[in-house]
Image 1 (spheres, rainbow, N blue to C red):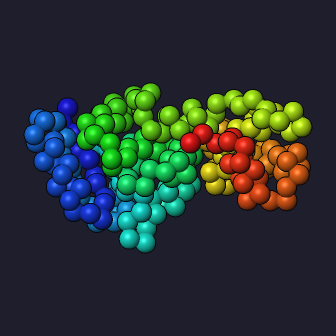
Image 2: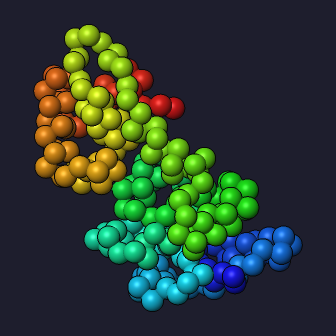
Length: 214
């Protein structure tokens, strides 16, 4: 099956490099450049079999995740792959909360991106060793109490990890599959148990106590 990928990136070398890599390897994908994120995302509902979207997180003043806000239930979002030079834990976690198929760092070998695209168009799951699933597993990993004086539940430890990397209540809810109201309740319980007044102080506490994995 011939794969068509709609690519949005503000660095021309990305298109040139991916096209050259595909030709060298004999990979059966072709990249079609679109200038803006809004332009390519408008095409999302019209994606055909064998088509996918690959985007940088931010192009000019456009934010991919902002533009996808409210679209996470639409099936085509599962064929959007983030290909970014900003592969920090927060960016990956935010992408996960929006519901894109996968997140591939630009520092990764090019075959990793090609594999992610192939999996997306087939309707498979991402590679278990992908950056996004690795982040998801890390943030959902139960943590033991670091102090007997701070009796957080397993779910509260998970929420605290998400607070520490900067996710909002809505993003925490999406990432953990809980409602915004439930996420907010967990956050309030955490603040009370840690005896802190806001999320920033809770994040500082989490970092100091190594709640967030490096």
